[in-house]
Length: 370
Image 1: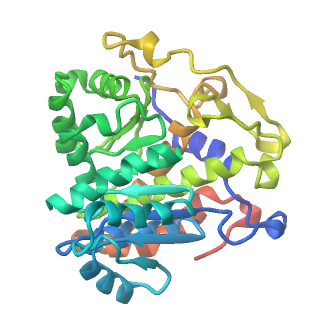
Image 2: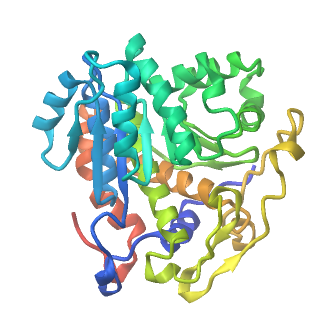
């Protein structure tokens, strides 16, 4: 099996990152990422906090949280940096609540749905309406936690939506596969991920000891994380994926000087766009394996050897962004465990995101300690 090398992912990802040296002087507030996290119920308040703060700590400019009023009061006390909208309010109809969130969504680049959402019938109804509205806006969406439970109950909500990224853990993955009648075994896990992605038409990020990212063909990330799996790591990942995707969109729009020549595409996730490093931009062919070409039976895995730059160039940019986020979260978890061992928590992980990001992703001339 060929191994996806983290150093190569980092090197390629830098081509899409907003600069923080002198060339960043023309950037305005919000151009390095505006994120909305939809979640936070009367029971769960930590998850949306972790997702939104991880987005900020990894480099997004602005993070909004749309949540239940009870969660909103708690989240406001946790951080003054977050813009909290307590609009998932049961005194409203589900449609009214969804419309309020969709108005906020018009102002952001990426929406994360699921952290702390709960399985309350009102919250799930609102989430479903929000997701349908986001599809009309053609918004990039990251789905985690109970939003994945919703998708397992109503897969038509995401079916064919190529702007959606689903981030299941093992249990959530099994539930989705059961819904779509996809057999899963340890020996055929990669095939199952590819098949799930192909049937839904979405990007899948399967979290585990080795993360697998697939859009019908897959890359496998082998980065050492923490031996302790504390709660909240998935929430951090969803927020960080959102930040990296917002940079992908910024690169597409030519907002960052090093991406001035990156061509605009209608669906950047379907194109191979890579290597704008050192002023060179190369545009690679469209994905060789479309969903129709793959079909249900052709879930062949491309486990990429990123030491070879020509092979690295075959990785679609959306998979590259998700892979970079997976690597960062594993490195953050390892740092937190090295500091506190069994006592590590997601709160500590949030605190070290900035330092780990700077050490791994920032180029030498622009490194900043956070």
